[in-house]
Image (cartoon, rainbow, N blue to C red; front, side, top):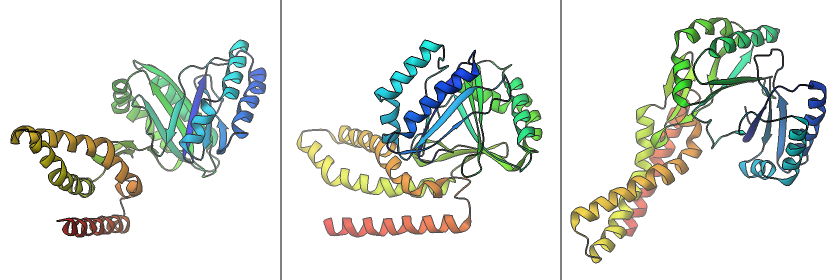
Length: 308
């Protein structure tokens, strides 16, 4: 799993793996020499069915972007293309504030000690099954990182095609063998949902942030938004001659835009674990987060009481 921000680059299978490995060492050296570099790992190449890929992690998105857009990396990529080392797709960027694209599934695995070869074989067979589905583009499997987590990256051409595979009977029948090589069931990287919710895939089931947590988070953003609109925007619109119904409509548009794209995403970041339907499911975590939000309510009530 990426430390903070990571990029996965997938290549066409090289005609000369040894020469490709020499070029890849230069590619990774350019990342290692860049500010913010954390780690890198190459995908497992135990099967022709698995993608040739590399993941590079940086401490933050800005450091990652600086390397991805840098002249040194661009020059190395051009040199690689001259040798025939072409990328299969655009870089897949992952991070805490950057969920996977909707057409890609990123899964974390805790492989049982001594079961690594069996796990890779199970991934290979799963790849053979998924490749028969419309829109399938490839699968990359990465060995354990510093936390002991293996990672698999599944790519389809369109989100609906990935969803069809995830729901398929063929996949459900193939998963028991994969789970047999793990110490616990795999989990999909979180995906963001509207109004602060988080979607996870666990034990073959889709899980989403409990509705009461989403409601508490939205209220924390909605109350100050409504108060500011009432105290400042509405009087300004009235002064401009807006009718009551038009003023109310404009206020709702501003409120929804502010909540959906600015306030809720910003407020959700410090509560990322709390709203995670898996990591934040314990009673202790749920109570702690709810207590902090209630304290936020009290602070806002006091603030607007002083402003009244």
